Length: 278
Figure (cartoon, helix red, strand yellow):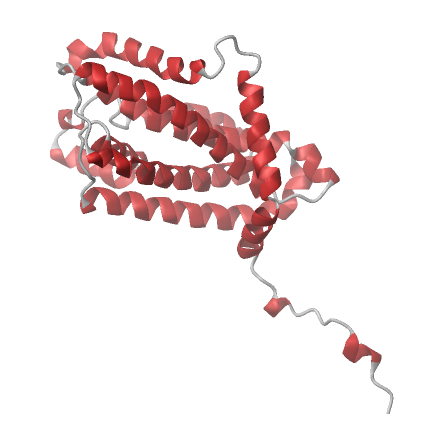
């Protein structure tokens, strides 16, 4: 009896295929060299034409901090450590705003590459986050110097700081992928985002102490402004010199994980259409 030729052919079963989200994780891992090269390119491109080079990453938040201290120090009647308070919040905010914008821009910049060869689109978002983390490490230097100069005490809680930064990075990746996906279909959203960022920053206790608001307003900010949690746990380990409490850590952990899962799922569901719309 001759074997049936059809028995030796692979059978496609859609039910046995991995989900798009899981497949994208595996593809991103396979293309880890591309992620490294994109990150390396972004870092080199950013600094090679700058006179100050890497120093600009440290001077930029310092300059903004000085302006804000001069303008607001008398208004809020803060102490000598106000500079460290502002800078710690600014570093968190700058990382979020810069990386989310970078994810959107890097996806558009890679549109030609996406049309020519296969490459998982998520590598552009991941490389933007890694670039932001490298810049963040450099920006920690002026924060430590300001803390030292203003008398903020250094404690072992500083060792927990990488955890707060990782949570911030995961949230930023998920939010950036969500924004990039929506922006592909509705380009005006990315333009409106710049306005939203300004309002969002002033609704986050970066410049002012949260104690200026009544308790009920603080509860609204804490429950509906996810950046509040990330600023709070980062300040806990740096500015306040203590570990975050469970009430501070759990919301940051939960919102970062939820945003990452949702953003990754939405992005992978629509990634197949990006080449035709970018």
